[in-house]
Structures are given as C-alpha cells and as structure tokens.
Image (tube, rainbow, N blue to C red; front, side, top):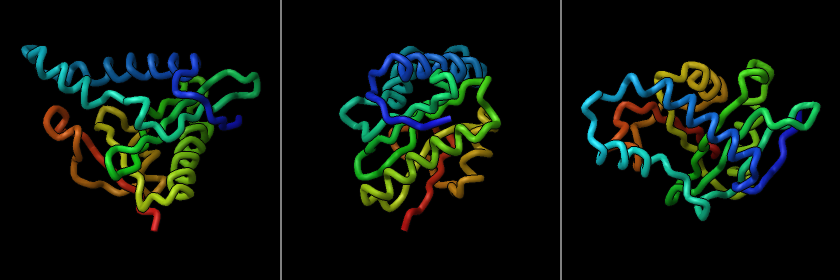
Length: 161
C-alpha cells in the first residue's frame, strides 16, 4: 500500500466519498427522527459540506494494483485543522490503511504549523473511534459547525505541540 496526494476532484476520491456517504447514511439514518424537517436535514448537510477552498490536501491509499482503497482530507476550518472524510474500503480494513491516512494528515498539519488536529465522528462508527483513540486523539466538546444539527457527535483533538 502507498499513500498519494491527489486533487480533491480526483475521480477515485469522489467515488470513495460517495461510498462513505452511503455508509454514513445507512449507519445514521435510524438515529434521525422520522419527522425531521427538511430545514434540519439541509442544515446538517451544510455543516458536513467540505468546501474545496478549505482543503489543504486530499490523500488516497492505493493497493498493490493501484486501486484506491482509502481516502482522507485535511482541511482548514477557521483557525483549526480538521481531519475529514476518512474512509477505508471494506476489502482493505484491518491492514493499517486508516492509520497511514491519519498519519499523513497529522504529519502535514504539523509541517504546516498546526497546534492540533480536530475531527468529528459518532457512536455509530466504532472502528473510527478505535482508530482515533489509538492514534492519541482525545475527546473534546462538539465544535462548530456541528453543534446545532449534530450535538451528539463525538469530537476529538490531537495536540501537536
């Protein structure tokens, strides 16, 4: 496996983000109230939106056949540095792909002068929670833009100082 930097709009990156969206929809849909308004759904989608101008770097993990098996983004969220949109394909799980992608984010943030990296996830992603806590991330309060529409999020930070 190797980690490569790619453009945000790389087709392989877009496909992995589509897969992540499908997975997250399946995991979290049962947690949203059936009578949830369109306004709340739209506000949550806006909070989760990643704007290209915020992106510092996008990485893919490629397997031996150069197939994309993982994806992650480092973005600037105001003054913070956020790990975003981490996915590992089911066929590549438990092989260190998530750890390698997380390390790429942390290394780049540190190189660019970040004091910490933050991230937002949820209880329906136990493998993500294990990955992040195993990498040294510590729980922090839910931060913007997730407070209003995803107050039950689990947020983490890794201090780089």
